[in-house]
Amino acid sequence: MRRLIRSALFVPASKPRAVDKAAHVGADLLILDLEDAVGPEEKEEARSGVDTAMDIWSASGAIRAVRINALDTQWGQADLRVAALADAVVLPKVQQVGDLHEARSALSTHGTSIPIWAMIETPLALMNLGGIAGATGTGLAGLIAGTNDLCKELRCSAEQDRLALVPHLAHIVCAARARGLYALDGVYNHFRDPKGFRAEAEQGRALGFDGKTLIHPGQVDLTHLYFGPTAAELERAARIVAAFADPENAGKGVISLDGDMVERLHLDAARALLSAAGDNDT
Image 1 (cartoon, one colour):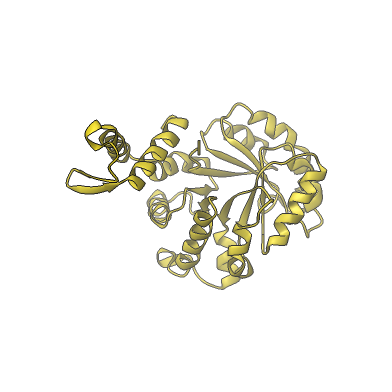
Image 2 (tube, one colour):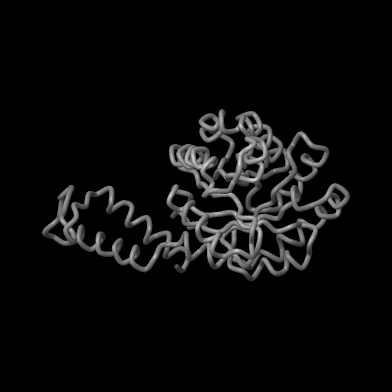
């Protein structure tokens, strides 16, 4: 059963109060951040708190992940050792297939097969996206759009409805869908701007993302509102399932429902939606 992952909250590992609060916000994925949110002088202390954070989050119902520093930094390998305590590892600055194989090999030496989430943050990653998404044997679970770094590296702007980023975001979604991976949209930096957040979240959902990465706990409920199935969508899915269950439609590949032609591919999608929603008490 494929669970919904609508909200992925980055939590600075250097802020114990934020770690405590994150356990109660209802996020689907909690990401303890050892990278961007932690200064160089804080890295070692932040790393030492990973086991405590995982314990605090153990009853949260969320997937517990750790974003490590890139493996080619002075902190990456040590981060990966403690990341083995989590349910998943978020690997930043993935640029080629070899980065995933290196991480998987290192994790194996630490006795774990936890999934890897790859952050797509550079032009080279975009050029190699097909190979990254298709990296078999690495335990890749999903792709995360690192929009801040993408804007920086592409020298583009995230303004004007992310016009410059949309082709690249769609590419990330396409690569994820081709390989059965999750796809998460990037963060929205202006956490005091709910109107802007809504516009970006709705755009992300329209592009096909499963959910969105977040920088503030106040964004979690909004994300579930915009990425979770609506009551109308659930009702429609239930009607599709019921219609195909009608003995009169037994064996039919296409039926008419409310003036629309509905195929069995729509039945599969309806069942998946209802199953995922039930798995997350939506």
